[in-house]
Image (tube, rainbow, N blue to C red):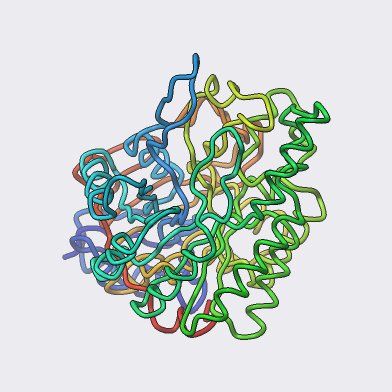
Length: 475
């Protein structure tokens, strides 16, 4: 007898979509059979998913919980805690979040990881994993910690090629230290995550725009330019090509030039992967001119319609593998407090609508196959980040992370009805499906709008990057 059987739904399986029964016992999927074949075996709960799509739980490879931001009166405040963001993610059909440990000089990497883990262990409903973000100067003692952390299940190191804004200088990793980290990750089996913008050009454009009194946030695309993405992507790719065994994942690709750089490198056989954000494919620089235009912003800036076209083409061709959020979840008051090019708050509240929005935009509006959609919101991230086949797939032995997408729940998004903060950039947008049920490792966390989660449900998932991911562009 099974704990749960989901029957009669159109399930997205590794071999394609099919109407099947999926049986769950404990935390795992234990059987998949033809429609109606597993129900007679018996189950504590049978869910009839007729007319619904059954997909693996979404995986968001780029989330920032509890990130400190400038608040009213110059005080620093934190973005929403993991309990708020993970609850919203589960309502939206995302069962695993990939967050970050931001290391700062004055502590060790191991101490930074421990502090972040202590936060998530007590405040996360969903499963999670953690990337590590470093910056210059590191020094040999910090570099020496990386091999042990890779072995402990933290195989992804994020580095920034820019300080992002002149008023909040932070994060920049100099190319010499990027080179050193790439060599360590190559030897230890890790993957470099790169936020790539040309720092000299970005800071020059800030100086130029401020001198010209073009300081309103509507000029952000002139500070974080298409050319900056071209220069930085090609420079860091060129550096990595000179490190045998190096592999890279380009976070939040925003411009056509970034897509072009990744596409060229993949054609040459270099192991490089890329994500974009649903902000970039659904909004552009013209949206800054709308009322409360800051709500559409994240760093790097929104770009232009031709860049959106290139991002969609990159997703369709397979040169962009993942759609993430770069989630920085904060109330509208905080999102709007900055209104200059050098103080506008980045990130967005997007983790809840991501899966349904992208189904609508990919499958309903643009004719992507449902299998390709699942790759972009779940499976590819699992494969690249070392979570597969535990996550990102409906298969026997995999975690029972299962989402039912119901076309009968099509509606217009109401930002006030979502579960993270008091606004949504997608307020009023149509979605053609919405999750009727979200299952995390066999437990029904959300059903019919009812949340059943407990803070003991979320678990840290240690990772190891597969050799095939590091040998060449295998996804």
